[in-house]
Length: 143
Image (cartoon, rainbow, N blue to C red; front, top):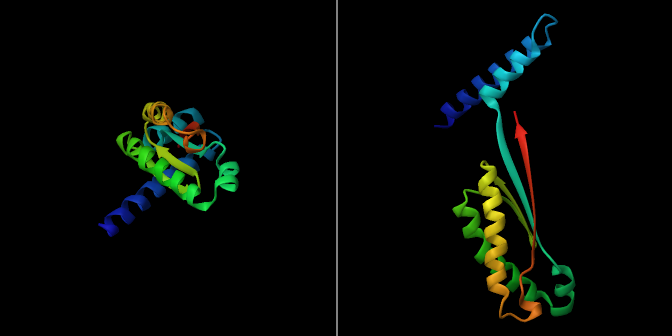
């Protein structure tokens, strides 16, 4: 399987380099080459960044155990939403997550679901126990 994957990547890279070389020729219509590159390799992806609001301030005030509990709870609640929306958790650092989505709509839906579930979670919680989430989603066309 690894050999097949290496062959596929090599073949894709070869094709890409040939198209780029063709694009550099003065007589070439770059729009046609760009369309071919897009048709072969182009995709739209979304990257989501999350961060817990007020987290550092509350950690200083309530200590490390509170810090660990809040991260544990946030992951317990949010990771199933990421999974259900086909997100790929790329990085988990402190109270922040970096998530990749191949489907822009699913990234948007995940962000709404996260906010909605945390709104319900926070209803009967003390202020220091509430999980307040900041979400940023960036969608880019990649080729």
